[in-house]
Image (cartoon, rainbow, N blue to C red; front, side, top):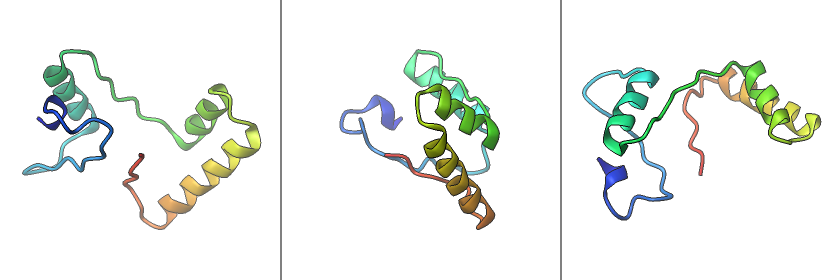
Length: 83
């Protein structure tokens, strides 16, 4: 697995395979490969905004981020690469 090999730290990777895989399955496989607990937590758009505010973002910034998320989802974007 890429995470266990040198040179992959701080890189974005697209994980693919022979068929669809649920997020919880990815977390379970990462847990097994890394030897530490990895959890998948589904977050609603409202929960996403609340989490940003709890993390210290001003409400206005969280609102703009939430609006951008809805804009992307409305246009069919389902995958975001965070770097």
